[in-house]
Image 1: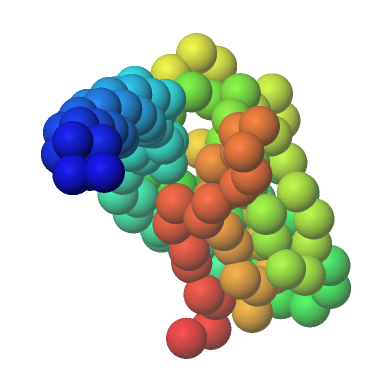
Image 2: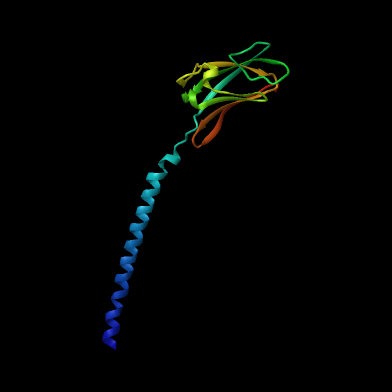
Length: 146
């Protein structure tokens, strides 16, 4: 019996080393998979851009987003930050509606200096919304009568 026990004592450390090696390989594989697959998730898809808004009462723009009441022309100018694909940017007025790049005269990329003018109610809230397959995000907001 004494000989049998001493032979089994050597099996336990070998199993421990094999299990430790298997766990290390599994963790390395999972970590590599997360780093490679998760790389896209770490990149922000929302452009970081600044817009300047200028409102002129009684004037009108290229697209009408009025609902009722006093209205005027709201000029939206990209003043800095990321260039934005015009096909992914909408102008949403509440109340009023939504217009996209064709009604605004935007095409291609919207870069610093690019502007568009819409007719909106004086008390409207206007949002520039960037849309992708993953959803939509407000890039800039103008609050009328504030």
